[in-house]
Length: 139
Image 1 (tube, rainbow, N blue to C red):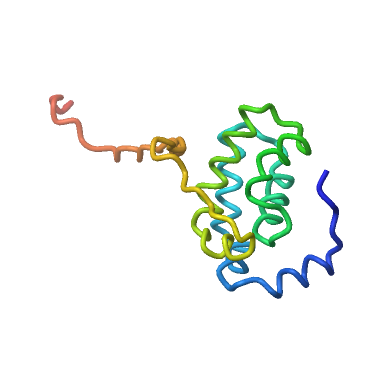
Image 2 (cartoon, one colour; image 1 turned 30 degrees about the horizontal axis):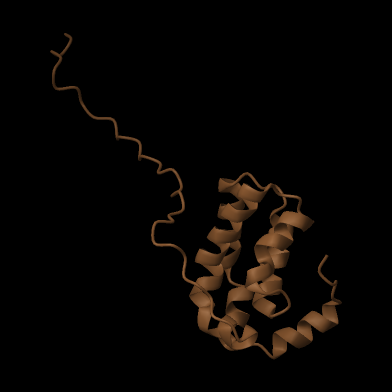
């Protein structure tokens, strides 16, 4: 189980972070990505996934330990934890790879080339009503 941190300890860590990671932590894009990943993989504990992703960005939890942590702490099945971890790595950790490598002094591997997240279903715009040219006018 990861160590619990006080709010003050986390703020002190936050203040020492590079600007790129500070921005990523409170980014709407990061929150949307976590939400989308959890929705796609049917994970209800979105706030817990966000907490551990935030810990990675703060330098508290290694990206290598992220998958194992969400598997144990949120009690996800191994395949679901792997999918969530891969997508979080691809959409959140990989874009700030250089800053994370600086903090952890390890290299972050790029996501596999064949890995593609399922795009959200596209909604087709409703066709505007128009005159039916195949009917004769009624008199």
